[in-house]
Image 1 (spheres, one colour):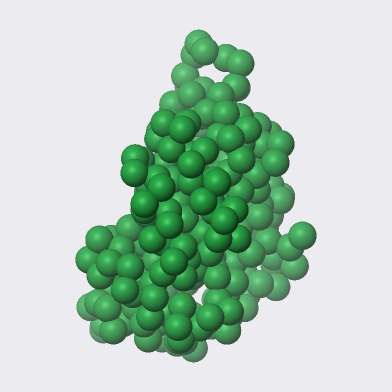
Image 2 (cartoon, rainbow, N blue to C red):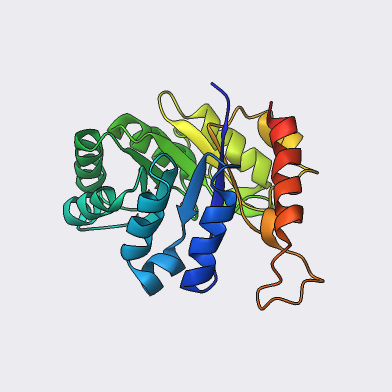
Length: 234
């Protein structure tokens, strides 16, 4: 199955978020409402985007740690297709979220960023039934992780693609979701990992020369960047 392209919204005013959703809905598979937006605007912004674009998949980056039942239900009822949970969340919370996702025909994405014993935890959450496991620190930094699910010993520094590759190797059922810092220059390396979801944000939106408050690239530039990624994603 071809990888899906997920566009991440992590800043901006409410009207800008809604406008961006309108502009980008036809060019991406999934739009992510980032945690900052969720805190600032609440689930109403998810409802508004869902009403305007009912066929567009929405990922709500709720970063659930506890209270999985109520939060998960509210997100799906607002129009979410995917809800995120932290990899550090207790197993019963993740299991509860997976059950609710099945009720709503939705998906659960588990964020394992920052977990030192990442190989072991990826194997665990995969067995719990999550649909995607995400590494969202992407190409922006190096990491110190234990990559082997059986190795409880040494933790060492690894590069982003090594980390994503280790996550992929420990997955039996869930798909790999990978971001950020992905652009036309490194997308070929990303696709070698056979990701289920490629998450992009700054690589599409940022333009240092833009006069806008958030240095947002023009619509023409954003569409051109997405189309360039699409061609390389196959």
